[in-house]
Amino acid sequence: MRGRFITLEGPDGAGKSTQAKLLVAAIEKANVRAVLTREPGGTRIGEDIRSVLLGPDSYAMLASTEALLMSAARAQHVGEVVGPALARGEWVVSDRYVDSTLAYQGGGRGLSMEALRQVQIFATGGLLPDLTFLLDLPVEVGLSRRLGNAGETNRLDQESYDFHTAVRERFLALAAAEPERWIVLDAAKPEQLVWQDLRTAMNDRFGHLLGDEMMVDLTTGSVS
Image (cartoon, rainbow, N blue to C red):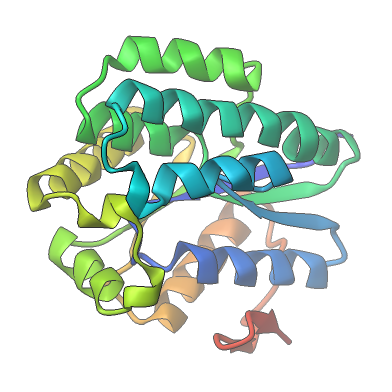
């Protein structure tokens, strides 16, 4: 039996990594095997590509190069991690996936959405998530969170306010176009409240999989 594929999307600063970690811990507490992963990255090759993509020395990178490198890392990720885990019946929770390329390189960079979609089909074999959470928040809030932690910032964080606004707008448009796959969460809330909203949505979609309210430790990403 094929596992379920859950993705978390949104801008940096929205808390995707924290919520993804909590989600995997909660799924495993429900006695379902789950894999936590991220993009770009998730594999040794993908992490090498990530360092090039997001590193400050890549400021001269063309938008098309950026899109193709993201997609190359994704192809490796699907082939090496996501696909095999789903085939084993495990659930996969990924911090970013195809929709990030459509939002950042399509919305932010202005590349052709049709061309990007075709590349994604080639890279993933057409694999789409069963459910995607958009952790949405105002651009200024996300940037404030990211830029307030110099050790966490990357090349894309340094882009203009207009770039990040276009990315947010594209994420929201993608969610509006596929309401059966997307659930939009208010990520401007405190992390504990975001987790409660996410858990409720998971229970609604997957038959109360995560049970009643769980105690969570946001510092460790554990649930009890």
